[in-house]
Length: 451
Image (cartoon, rainbow, N blue to C red; front, side):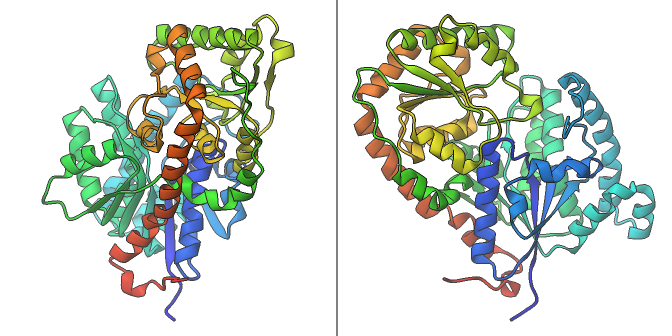
């Protein structure tokens, strides 16, 4: 047996978003399932200047035998007990320091000797850079490559997202990108950068058809990157959730759902009018179903400070009869806690994409409200909820009410289709790593577990 392979897992996000937690745990499970005795390191999206707080952001991944390190871009998120700066101030500070971090990238591409780079790079980032240098294989945790209305913001976001992969390219490391979603990128320079980075990956998996079509068109027929459509990595954790699924409560036989769950997003990127409308329509639909005898449960799928939903929750709790009919889960439920919570619902109104996936797994019918329409939400359509999706900016009480009631009426036939598609996705999700290893330039060095 050869020496253990050093695997670098790139750009893990905060696991206080349980959707990201599920994808990252899924990736870890697959790496340890298919690679014999790997030495695994994780590079966070949070900069190494915030390393003190990393373990609290990775309560799921930290249970695996891995080293978790901060990234090479300084960040200033309100982690730990730090006060909550305005999003604008956080973004401004990170933009300034990101521009400074481009110096390191230029030095690496110019092949400046390590001894000189170490003198330029702040000490907090030395260990992280060393992990990049020493790794054998890079598996890039696929991201949401969103289009933006402002071309300059889109360009900045694109460069920001591909920063760590660019470091890997500068160091001539083999890169596989798994589980990405790509919107229609509008800025020509953003498209060129993304095309170049993807063409420097030996493997690329997209998690829904629209992203696959977008990327294959972007790369062109001459691209040597193996590009495939494969299920979202969160499907890999379902094997561990089967015991929860087996205990799911039967759905109510009532004319209306007895217990309706709700995941919410305080999304402002589409403007104040859309956000105001969202709040009003959600509270209206809650009032309607409370009058029909339903109980409402608000579920914390995401508990990051900088994505707080407190304002929307407070608006909802001002509804007459809220104390008697609406409950709000507190704390930070794990992935498997959430499976159990969703299994006790009759219905879910999901503004968080992975809440819809979790609910689908445990057999709970749903309506999805994409707050950032595009790319990833086609996963829900492909599961079988083609007619149960209404855009965040298009909400209208009458339409939402009609869709919920129609889905509730048709739930048995919908759930049969969804369950079949879930089974197919659970069978295919392992291919994200199997095909990564098969196509890896270091394939001959990797000992693959065949069992």
